[in-house]
Image 1 (cartoon, rainbow, N blue to C red):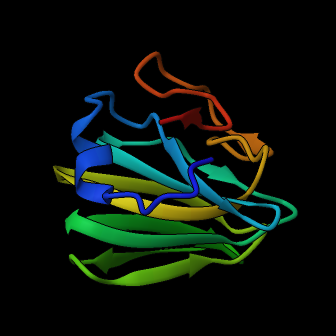
Image 2: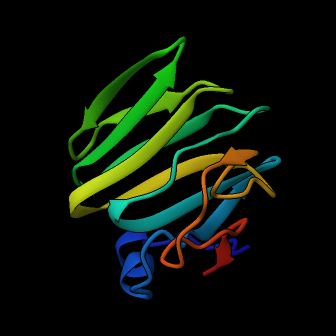
Image 3: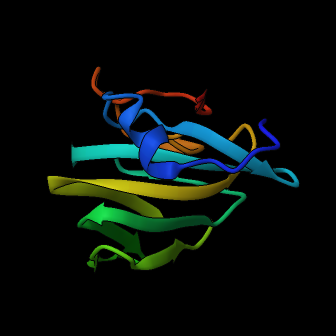
Amino acid sequence: MSDEPIDVAAALSAFDELWSPRIVTRVNDYDVRIAKVAGEHVWHAHDHTDEFFLVLDGELRIALRQGGRERTVVLPRGAVYVVPRGVEHRPSSVDGASILMFEPSGTLTVGDRHEQVPEHVDVTTGHPL
């Protein structure tokens, strides 16, 4: 990781792949990841960690399933939200968004439990910038 400041806008302009996070830096044992998203991700859950989202541009929707109920939170630009560990969720964006996430290093983008993963979703722990 770099010991120089990182321009997040420049980092986002360096790639075009959707649902394919890039690791901007690390904080202790956590990755700081950025991603471009559009359409739907997959229903998934992280059994051992919360997942932090910050919307840098656009709008992100996160559908949540918990206790037999389903709801959707809408995050406009500048909004943050934490999906608690174990909660099934499916991020999506109708018109596209850029997001920043904090996750423990090595966390898969599709969590510990997930539905079938379509080809457009990158099952990864994040790619270096």
